[in-house]
Image (cartoon, rainbow, N blue to C red; front, side, top):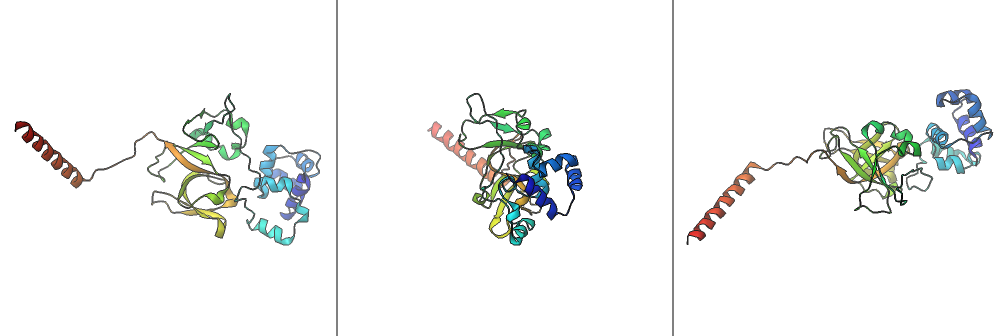
Length: 266
């Protein structure tokens, strides 16, 4: 692995000292220096920390030799054009299984959702979450259940839970698909997405509540994408019957009752 050499090169691109980087990452200078000099190997939590800090994927950090990069390669990195939109690179996805080695659906409680962006790849975070089975879902796909906050996506109300399917290749997501989008800045959001990857390497996120304006999120700022499957709600969706339709239905029912009475008398 080229981790140490890559860390040193990435730090050099930022023109920062080991002390500065270590302080910003919450590490001691000696521990960070040990990683750069390959005296110690970083664990998965540290690798995720480095990836977020230097804005590189784990796959690139672990497998690529940045010393062989040309100026054009660095330009792609620094302009955000290295997003892993097809899922070709390493994406860490931990999961919980039952005694039969079948994957369970982890439910992210509202209180635990704030820590999801830090714990999504941490088995210790996931193993304390509630889990369940939905027997009608495919066994060869990965599902997770996320809490819904706010009023931006009716008829899915606040307090509901969306069950969603993990998407490895983001290019496969069709515009107009409701998705759970996990971003570095916002955390868990539920939106209708429009795929702009070919032109802008981004998604436009839209709400079904037109009060909220659409906005764009670059693929490099997205951690995970999950496609909507179904939802569990504490409320029935609101529905209204038009007064005219109701009057017509009542008149029709009265007519049928009158006809029935006439037939019974004859």
